[in-house]
Length: 458
Image (tube, rainbow, N blue to C red; front, side, top):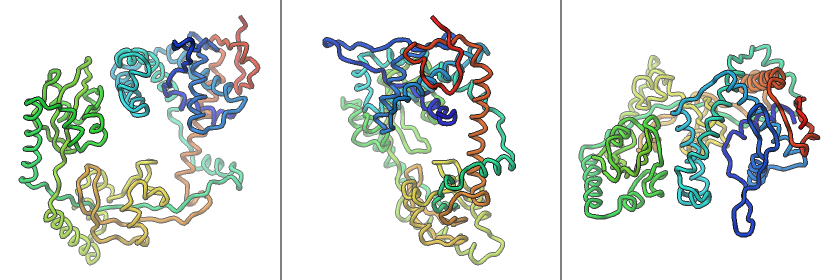
């Protein structure tokens, strides 16, 4: 296996996995043993089998050499960890907590609920957190070491051209039609009556809880936050930095079981209830209600953009870019000419085959436009859940084609950069592989490792 493929597996392997268990006379027994040592860091048999299980679930083929490949990936990780410790790299407690929370939320989403996770492990959430804490700390150290090795990687235009020329012509990727879009957004203000209605509803919920109703049940029935409503409004343990400031400030002073006053954030209005506190982290339930824009206010937004549309069409001095900066209510795009960024790849390019999955209204607009044309104001739902109007402009559209330097330079530059990063990693591994004690279980000594490890004998 090439190091390029190996390192993609390496980064995938930085995800904490669920241990492998088997039943033995009715008792859970961990099947495990040390299969490799790099420096003071061990590789467990279960680490290999966990990744095999993940590959099987995802339909990735498992061959006779797969376990050897996974073992070497894990040995690379331990080598990075060994050097990170020798170089006295550190990660803060806050970094560990944030990453631990992120991973536990992922586990909960995969297994269904915290209760299911607790039942699976046969431990409390606190005990699960502590079991994973050291592993998360090691993962962050490994990532920090890798980032140091790959830092300051730049590729010149000549290197991009050489990379492109090195790809066999029959292996060049086929690029689907891609588009670049810009927008001018007009949001309607929420009426005072609507705000008062939402606040009144949340005050009613608060009173109902005070009268004995369950906060979680009300959150399940009425909260407009889809991510937490199905969990009775529970967000899970989070640090202040993971919450919007208004929400964090309101939650910070609450005692266990206590409810907050009504809190306004960019998402709407909230009622909070403290579940538990662990150091600097809190776990709260909340009910989110989102004020709705009236049809009359929406119509006023449309009329405003009708005027903007006509002015762009009739005034040579008012470009789409100037109008976006002057009139758009979308702070993420107004200062870059209204240009949209694809959240899937961080670029302004959208694959039309994937566009419908991101935003069907964008796909509908693209189908009607030619390059340089713009739509009349169209209704859409913004990321905050509120309805608004926008004008869309098609800036660029590419025909389906085989990748080439002229049309796909940025894409090829990214690919060349990744190859150069991997070359740096390969060079680093070659230079440091002899700096640590390495032992491998005899069962694996005949593996066709890509790196010539200096394996000690026992």
